Image 1: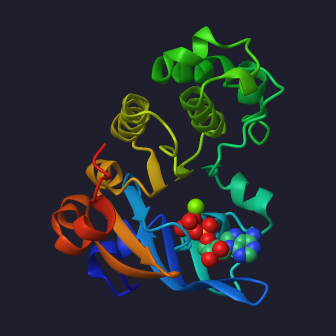
Image 2 (image 1 turned 30 degrees about the horizontal axis):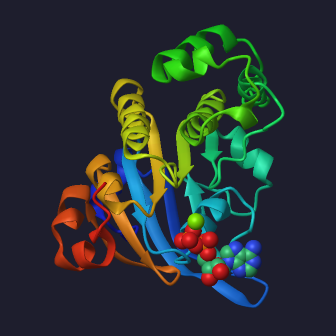
Length: 251
Ligand SMILES: Nc1ncnc2c1ncn2[C@@H]1O[C@H](COP(=O)(O)OP(=O)(O)O)[C@@H](O)[C@H]1O
Ligand SMILES: [Mg+2]
């Protein structure tokens, strides 16, 4: 987990490296010295109970709220003091918790919003890529986003993030409130993106079972700090993970 880890040094330096990050909401400390890494081409998941600080970490990576101390290195550059749009320009895209799509706009207009930072040069090709990944969105292209089902809205939120051609995709609880079959489709799409394009994904989830099965590696957050890490398989096999996060969560 530390910078001295030989497996992540030199040529294989991590894409994202979070070191000793502390974040506060006023006087409330939400992150208490977080250390973690995401290597290029990996799916890494962060699991933890409600209120652990998972969303705060993801938002801190995006610069809002800002880390009060520690470093967030992206390709070796400390981005922790950059404005959010400068962070996004480095090809980091976020699908936030609760999706935050534009409900009054059509599916197409939402997808267009995703290209704000990169322009429309690749629009048609990228649209085809999205339709292959989520055929439902093609059927709904002119529909107002607010009238989509929860699963379709989640697909749209991910698709909109993908329209910015990210190198690092941040996903906050994409499975929240969705039917098991839809969760399966969405996780399958994430796996496919990673497998075929090598897209690096950082996935925050309370749905530990599916997240750990999907991810190459995982971290467990408790009370604003990382308490465990390992491969998805290792973490799934650990008794303390099973009892704390998997009871009844196998759906
Ligand atoms: N805007 C905010 N203002 C004050 N406290 C917040 C705010 N957002 C989150 N918190 C607090 O920070 C802690 C971590 O929250 P959060 O990052 O949302 O956790 P998680 O995503 O793991 O459920 C919680 O105690 C939560 O109440
Ligand atoms: Mg959250």
